[in-house]
Amino acid sequence: MNIHEYQAKQILKGFGAPVADGAAITDITQAEAAINSLPGPVWVVKSQIHAGGRGKGKFVELPEDAKGGVRVSFSAEEALANVKEMFGNTLVTAQTGPAGKQVNRLYIEDGADIESELYLSILVDRETGQTSFVASTEGGMDIEAVAEETPELIHTIGISAAAGCTDADAAKIADAYKLEGTAREQGIALFKVLYKAFVEKDMALLEINPLIVTKKNDVQVLDAKVSFDGNALFRHPDIMEYRDETEEDAKEIEASKYDLAYIALDGEIGCMVNGAGLAMATMDIIKLYGASPANFLDVGGGATTEKVTAAFKIITSDPNVKGILVNIFGGIMRCDVIAEGVIQAVKDVGLEVPLVVRLEGTKVAEGKKLINESGLNVIAADDLDDAAQKIVKAVKG
Image 1 (tube, rainbow, N blue to C red):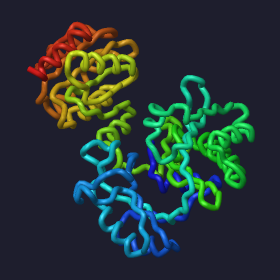
Image 2 (image 1 turned 90 degrees about the horizontal axis):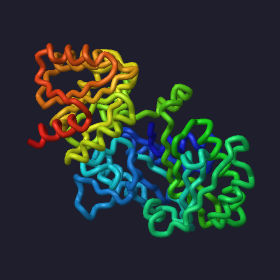
Image 3 (image 1 turned 135 degrees about the vertical axis):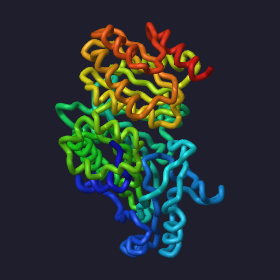
């Protein structure tokens, strides 16, 4: 689960991280009070959407040369004008796709006197099995570009789960940044605080870009991006309160109600599969034959008829779907349950696109019998290769 920058900063501030004062607004009428609550003389107005690259983004309703989604204002009047121009408009960034995202929240923050910008993130390193810091002196830039062009400027410091982030670990991170004096002392303290927040709140990613050193040689969290391990959210009802469903795909929200592993994509063939590995293989073979999957959907091994029906309805609710491929290899999952769910869903919502069904495994004969006797216009497939070719042909003509 992702949260907004201002929410991430509230969490980090609670752990003791140095964060500038700021005020979030969710309604345009809150703007003047939010601006007046800060001393100035510099106010920074920040769009709050779940996507990076806000500063370089463009508002679709504004001229091409208009400022981006993060704006420095040098008076209260300028800050208010920026709020009015940004709030409710659609911001397009490199991460939103061409459709962009509507800005329904803004964060107004005290300006900072920046000497240098650094990059910091904490994540789980799958290669080492450790929680690791990623540090670079090239803050404020796309870390992917830094990794490609100047990989020597990126430092990874693994942290022992048993020992946690020690003074020695924090000193290594400070060395990577070449921090000195007060900034080094504050940095060493901050790195331990950030690690504590990451672990205690079950974060999947904590990214601060930039982490700044001010002209007074203080360190400060200037931006914050946080996502959480969804499997651990039951332990954090306080974090769940930060969820902003307007930033999520409606189909993914509906899928979560049925405990379905669903991710919306931008292709034309809807997929319903059991098992993550088989789902990935199904998506790959659809690409192999010249089409693109519209979603990743794993109904799991213990799906009920109701769950399968819900999954089918979610797929058909996507206007981009031009065909559907149901690919089930029944081990724990029974093919007759899948068949019952598909039949019920078609009865509920109808079937306006080609449907290819490949069933194999437990109760496969019963499943095929149910579909064959249902009267549905279903294209049967013998194996995955056959199924992929048939659905691509049906969609592409």
